[in-house]
Image 1 (tube, rainbow, N blue to C red):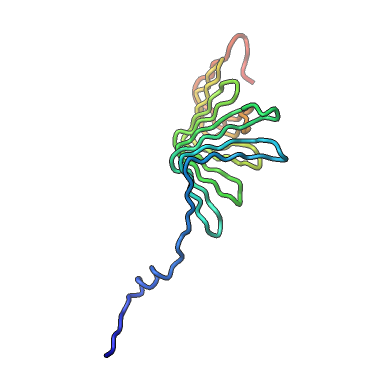
Image 2: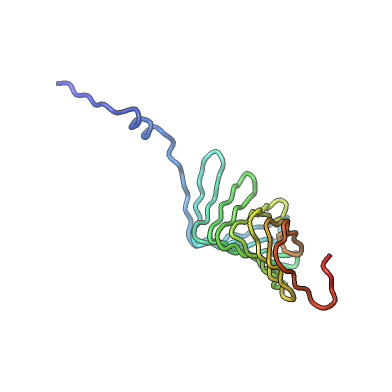
Length: 170
């Protein structure tokens, strides 16, 4: 008795292709330090680590990060509904209801923001809206800012800038 089977080329390709490996972690709390000093604490309900040629870590259900200064005090924090970290480039893409607040209470809001961990900077080409405690900047398109939000540059400001007292914008 003889038996045989036959598979189409597409079936063979489907079964012989690489299987993506994904590590999953829930209720994540990760501490980041540099030269023994706490720099940030990341919290997320779900983390997916995609293993491949380049490791990509996804936070599909929100991410919160507290940034610390040299005295271990929070200098700023960020929230986003989605984040994707490219490990070999130390870059994080933040999307959907991104919010960064510094210790003075200044708030940056945007729908997409890049966080360069090596340069300790945020940047985007998307629309941004910044609210400061004593004045309001209606926003603009594109931004570059320090991770601690002590400085920022809106590339294409739009709208009215309100300032207090006799201060003129520079």
